[in-house]
Image (tube, rainbow, N blue to C red; front, side, top):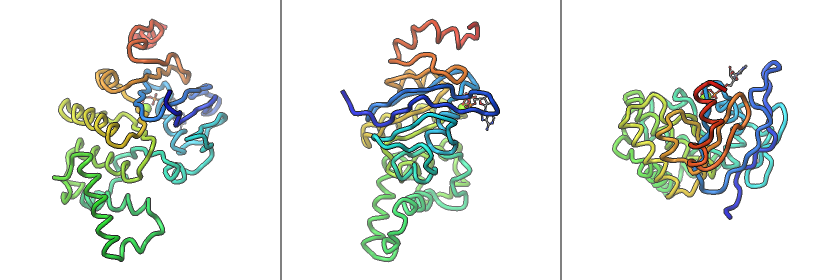
Length: 250
Ligand SMILES: Nc1ncnc2c1ncn2[C@@H]1O[C@H](COP(=O)(O)OP(=O)(O)OP(=O)(O)O)[C@@H](O)[C@H]1O
Ligand SMILES: [Mg+2]
């Protein structure tokens, strides 16, 4: 039995009396890929924002590696080990891919600014940047300005920036949204590779069922703020409540 990395207990988020996340509890095992699925408005992105600290829960707790993170600021949650993809706009348009990843690493190492001024420090930094770009498969884009990248390439840069924080849990909100079939296939392969290489845990929301069933070892189905079902892909595929929620005949 693998160790639990994330434990969410009785999480509630109210928006003007409306329970958008309604008493949600689940846990994630170390090193696994879990997909949160459900119809539009089910509360998936809200759940993701609660875990990453962008929103404060109305009630309930979130623990990362046994430590309560509820109430921490987003940057503290990143420090605690949760990496998340930001909106595309937070990538610096006027910097190269390499420079963007450098900035992200600098944000992690924070005060250790002598890192920048020593030759050895600089070498180490360059090595880390190269390692991350290689892991994401975008070494060939290193010197290209982000503003000149395609949509799919930017998404890969975002993943590289997430990795720069050395997260043990990676949150991805619809990582393949708006992508072509070729780009989607590339991202699916990348997430599988990263799971092997980094041994990180992944929690992703996704509408593309082909992606979900290709990647996820566990699936959590949300509907109207509640967990409707949770389990392995085969159980979810055959669950009549889930089928009903998706067909809208519930
Ligand atoms: N800041 C907010 N204030 C009020 N209501 C909100 C806010 N954010 C989200 N909601 C509402 O909460 C519900 C859940 O939204 P959420 O974005 O979490 O759904 P989702 O499952 O991610 O949907 P989608 O699949 O479309 O991305 C929706 O009804 C939405 O309108
Ligand atoms: Mg959403």
